[in-house]
Image (cartoon, rainbow, N blue to C red):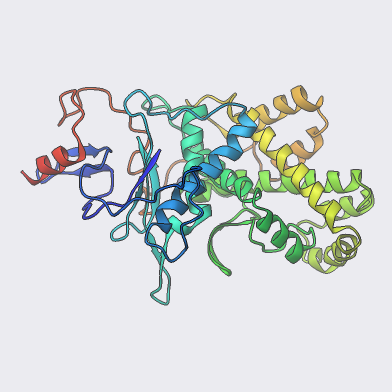
Length: 403
Ligand SMILES: [Zn+2]
């Protein structure tokens, strides 16, 4: 992969309409001028680049993608091979400063724009690890699960994609010592506090795009859905609860909390008394053994990462359902632990009605935040209207569009 910081790139990659109204798909590589790239030192490192240097955004973007891949290649046990490798050797990481209030990946590219906060401040997504790692999650899902055949992409395939992308980012972030330290120092191990790990795609310390700890169930979508990020929430919530339960098992196994306290936490999960009763238990237990809490957290993080990687590699893209994800999680647990986590899986999937209720029809066309109206699932297949089988470069296509 490589980063480009393009000068005067007028359009994002992906599907656009030309002046005649025909749809064309703009693909990398960017052939135009670029700002000076971030260059490594003799050892291949970029950490000589200071945050105020103009190349910092490029280095940060590259480093965030590389970090996320390193984390997940550890769980998969092999390099992630790009799903577009038939046509393109490398992923182009693009910094878009002007026109993209979003970040998204597609066939051969990952483009990051900017977020304009309510007070008018500009936050480049190139500096937002969560947002970048989420897009890498989409790349990983395409690589290990694949792209559905046309017409067989289900609602739950899209919801699954978003959920998997959020979990990719959550687990990758938990590989920074600073994140683990801050999580434990602020929560004392009560992971249901609003914290930097369950705030997905954090924009500031009190603004985020989604919460991993959320109350939504598939029953909330049985009559229909209109945004795949919302549809992802029951699955992400179930996986976050599973993570918390795995962590509690690790704490109990280390004698840091009692089985009774872990059960109490489970029972009170939906209760307004949860924080009043549970927080003091964690405050006391954490103060006695912070180092052991850290070990338990890292162990449960790796259990979740391995469980997800082993599950994802067994899924097929066509007509993918959350029920199939749940059944595959159970099958993986049987193989790797002999079924030790079966109760945890059943309870948390059941609370979200996963396996009992399915997503209803799509109620509205895709909104502006949707990744899928760009269709990322696009794979060039030869003759497709404008191209007659030859893949046009961005400049050729842009020129074509002008003419
Ligand atoms: Zn996404």
